[in-house]
Image (tube, rainbow, N blue to C red):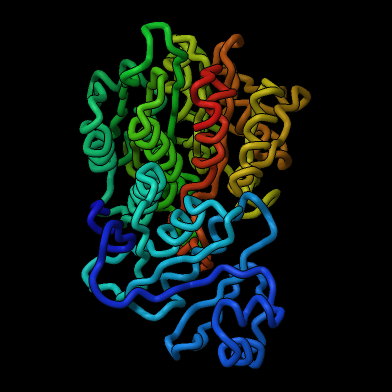
Length: 471
């Protein structure tokens, strides 16, 4: 979505006309409410049943008779941004400003408001929403919202409009303004360099693409830490010959959510001009059914020489990631992070809101988990349990792409990926749902970018750049 969409939601500088007020409150005692809105307004708020529960909004008259908002905010130094996410839809259309307790970070409020104002529509004009007046809006906060909007837009786009080529071009369009060096690989070159990606993509008339982008911050020395990002970009997943039921395909346009998340994260790192070197790899592909599609029990050879038996054509995401992880490992990054909508097992374990992480490195995992809790972008760790590695054995190849057991699907998928990452590389795998099943404050139904803020908040510690620790 164009930046002008966000500019219409958050207005900076001076404005003409009436600007409504929303007061952030934590108590409903007479003294507090009377000081804010006068006796009549306080009485009105009490009669409406307003309790100042976090995120609760009441519209009441103030002492002058003007309509003002009362928004409950939690007792915390770090407030969940989604507390403010319901305001764009709940407030009357027009311009509003926030009056908040001093310990509430305005960046949290602005981010939550902006994320709550997001809408994806094609061919119809969206309803007018409330807008936020923030005279001194933090530019980094607005850009963070913009990066998340970008990722949401890509996930929400219908698959007929966003195939592998279109996803690759969207990455070029997003990163080219920041001076990234971008290579889009296709055809015979892709078949030679990324044979597993080619295997997944050969069933579709829309050929696969691999995006390889590199960038360095303007203050990054030659030996700056290298952060390598990998994203699964399956633009539509039919399941292949192991075809999904009709109900299982209804959200499969979102199977490129990992690529959208990795791209949004890369864009935000570039926007902030962080002093790191960055590499991004996106595997853009469609898993279709045709006479050319991979079959169950086919055996294919990966970039690193391992042979893989195709136990299930619907376990294609790990194939897309494997060659990209192999190539990323070759540069010995300070941190290698991949994001994918990989397994239903992860969703059974943790539901839609909490991505699963896997890592060989306890320090990496603990840093990410702590950052996620701090910024209200939670993650949860599952183990790379060595005892399940033998479940991926094949009688004819080095390994199978699926487990021989009906258990621990998220774990065995991560163990498969682990075979394609060099042992001395610090690696973390994020298994995300990338979708909101229903609209909630700040989280409209549709595509979602989960884990991005947690990764950003932990980058300083993860890649060892002191200047990032307080960013």
